[in-house]
Image (cartoon, rainbow, N blue to C red; front, side, top):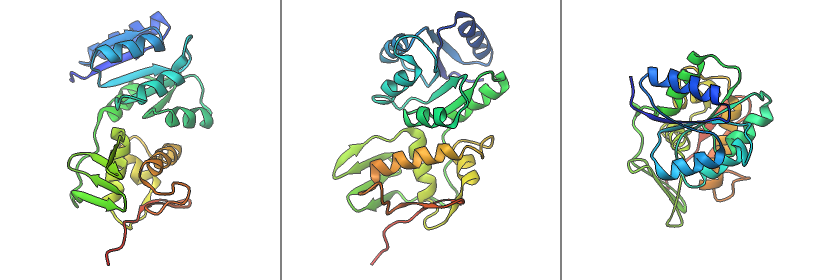
Length: 232
């Protein structure tokens, strides 16, 4: 059982009722919203641990609501959508979603995705450096704080967990599946597009030239590698 607070955003009353009943039975505290506008208002007024956000709604819609939520909040966001095309998933992740679940879905699947979105990647036995300097970028893994040219840059929890895992294994190629399972959870492994989007977002935040990365390197068809500056 858990006391995590979840906001369910969907314009269909029946879906909101079913989701609330199911999640409350699992120990979650649940609020609901009928639109993206109402969701934004509720997030401003209350603290939530997760947002389940339907993509297809009247008004500002799920995609724009996701983008607006992410502009000022690190709250995990799981998109629910009838669309299954990779472009839709990539667009949603690029807008700030942590995960994307296609309708129709089973409740066990959704509950697993909720647990994955709420989890934090465990501390690694090999140990993560407390502080990493990448030129003008400083990453404080203890404080979960990143600064670039002495200005703080906000990373989402998933972005930070991904960066921490890579930095804990410097100069090691981490395969896609291993990286997904370490950061998202054991039920993941095929969602390579998630990594592509999140790595691109991290590059925009910490790399001097994101289009020609120096630290977060792609190993084609295999995975990713963190390449810290070499010590003199």
